[in-house]
Image (cartoon, rainbow, N blue to C red; front, side, top):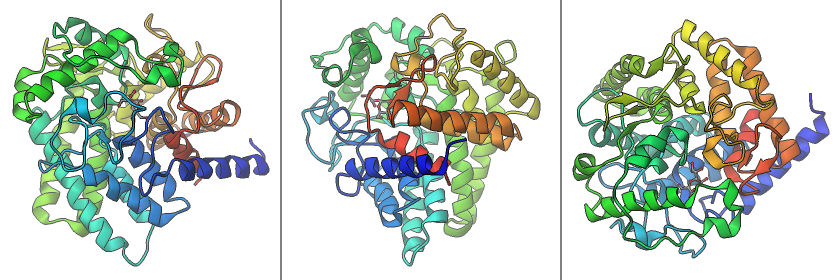
Length: 424
Ligand code: 2M8
C-alpha cells in the first residue's frame, strides 16, 4: 500500500500534466512528440479531467467532435493548430474537413467517456451538452456499422494499423508484410528526433503506414472505395471490444437522450456482435485473436488486445477464467502486468512500443474487465501495478514489463488520466 502523502503527490502531478498539456480546450498526448488532439487519448483524458475540472472534461469531448466528419467518423487526429513536430501532418493526409484531420479513426472510447463525464460532471448545462454529444456518439457508431462492417457480420474491421491504436502490434505483422504497395509521400519521421528509435516502430513499418495513407488519399477517403481497395482489413479484438463497451454506454445514455428506434438499433448491434465474438476465441491459446479478412484466417498472436473482451462483458465465466489463467502464465515471465504482447511469444520486445510494453489505458480496461467477472484480486493487482509503475517510472507513455522503467514520451496525458481515475 502506498502512504497517503505519496498518493496526494501523485495526484497533483497527474493534474499538473493535464494542465500543462492543455492547448485551449483540448489536451495533447504530450508536448512535441504528439502536438495535436488524438481520438482515444482524449476520451480517456476527458474522464481524467472529470475528476477535478468538470468544465474542462466537457470541452475535451466537444473539441474532439469539431473534427467529426459528416458521415459520422471521428478521426484519429484533429489538427487544431499547425506544428512541424509531427509526421504525417495534414499535408500528407489530404482530407477535406474544415478543421484539418487525419482520414482514419481510432478505438471508439468516446461514448464510454461521455457516460462517465455525464455521471461525474453534473452541472446546469450537463443535460444539453450530453444530449448533443450523444448524437455525435450515435453517428460515430452508425458509421462503424456502415463503413466498417458493410457485410453485416457483427464485427467491424480496421483498414490501417493506426486505427487499432496499437500501431506495430505483432498481430499486424503478417498482413503488413504482405503489402506490395509503396509510399509516394517521402517519409520524414519526426518521432525518432524526440525519443530513441529503439522504442518506436521501425522504418519499414512507417513505409507501410504511409503507403496505406497514400492509397486511401488517392481514393478521396471514400469509405466504400477504401473497403474495396484495402489490402489491410483486420478484425481487431480491441476495437470490437471497446466498441461493444461503448454501445453499452451509449444504450444507457439513449434511455435519456435517444428514441425507441435508436435503442433497438443499438441493442441489435450488441446482440449480433456478442454472438460474432465466438469466432475470435481460441480455445487452444486461451485468448481472443484477430481475424484477417483478406485471407480469411485467424492471426495467431497473443496480445493484450485479446483480454479486452472482458471489459465489454463478452466472455463466458469459463472463458474469463481461462483468460485469467493465461495472464497468470504471462506474469510468471515478467513481473509487471499487462505486457502488450505475451512474453511467451517470440515477437515479444519489452521496450518497443506495442510489441511488449505496458500501457496504463489498456491496464485500466483489463482490470475493469476482470472486476466485472468477479476476479477482484487480479483486478486490484493490475490497478496497483499501474500506480506503482507511475510512482517509480514517472507518468510515462508506456512501461517496460521486465524492469518497470518508464519509456517513450514523458508527462503523458492519458497515463495521468488513468492515475486520476484509479484513485476515484
Ligand atoms: C501512438 O500513435 C501515433 C499514431 O496515431 C504515433 O505513433 O504517431 C499510439 O500509441 C496511439 O495509440 C496513440 O493514440 C497515439 C498518441 O498517444 O500515439
